[in-house]
Image 1 (cartoon, chains in turn green, blue):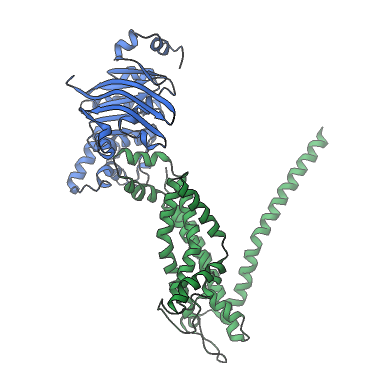
Image 2 (cartoon, chains in turn yellow, red; image 1 turned 90 degrees about the vertical axis):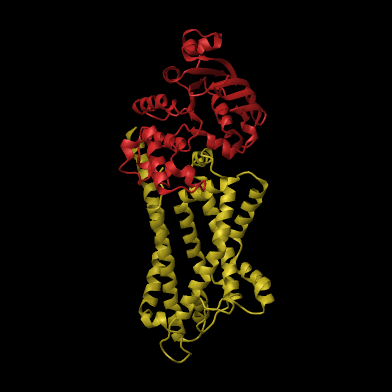
Length: 281
Length: 252
């Protein structure tokens, strides 16, 4: 029955067209956002913008140096806190698939991943900011570390789980102690996956605003003291974009573009590292 | 017997409730190649993995009985020592993919934290690769990753890695089942050389291979050691009906 076949082929074609159309729709939001931010932010970015501090209201110019350095520092400390815990937790989960501890660990990590960031912020406020009596970059880093932790744990776990078990057996059969097998063989073999998980997590927390509102708080001046309030890009965007001043709006647009470029770069680096350091079996 | 290196006494192995290796009594003479054959699921690989205590790494796996290495019970020693003395080569070549050929061979020393001079390392690497008949093929690419080698070469690299530790016994778990015929015959020739220095126990599916490489052969069936004899006798004059059936291909 040729017409019937024609009809079915037509249906297949329509379906194919439909998925292509939808995947184009999926890429569209990023491009629209990118174009819009580029249009608004590009003209604001120049050398002065990157190295100067914000000017008081009424003066033109000024930059976001304090927020840029602040963001780098806060995210850096968050990563330092989260990475060791995350990798160790991931190793435990990949090694112990069925133990009671791994069940609870996996569950709590998953729930943590879904916890609203504002909740993390407010909890850290009560745990750290209040007892210490001051907003601080450190408390912001801790809040971000908590946001980062589940991503690192799960990506480490998933990466290591995919490695063949014969690898571990080869090490143990050579009489290597367990910790050497894990640290010198298993972890290096999964290095690209673990690293890309970390980079993605860093990209993810770089733009988090809510956990920093009651912790790092923001600071109009330049500060590198992690025990004092510190400015960061998302906070600067939040504060300046909601202000009534055009000069501040300009700073916010520029900062938004910088933040977007940061995330974009980290994602590209992830793609490159996974390709470069992929271990061939 | 004076030249017995390894002796299993009433040895049992279990996976949970599953009794997979039953009351094995077996003596392995020094500097021999002993083949262990039998149909799938007969417990031969499990038995092999009991010898260097790899069996117990699987959850729920337990053992009973004694495994004497030079009159010392393997199950009374620390597993790490046992595995220094008893090397193992697996079914699929598994060189460490993150290490170079050189580092793969020396891994047993390096990752065990044994400090040795660069010169001694070079000697160990060269000798081990030579014994594994791989030196000539890789001597110019020692610092390349081991995974660039062919399957057969990788397997010989794994043998080199195992013998670099100077073990007394070498366990081979179907070492050629993932290899092509040429690589297989390379490894079989190699086993003949190796038995001058090591005692070799090889698990194999392949009867012809058992016949070609071994001095003595053990036949396992349903977890039991049915027959264990000089290979020639075993193939020409099997005592047990089941051995005879297996050798003549009546079941596999």
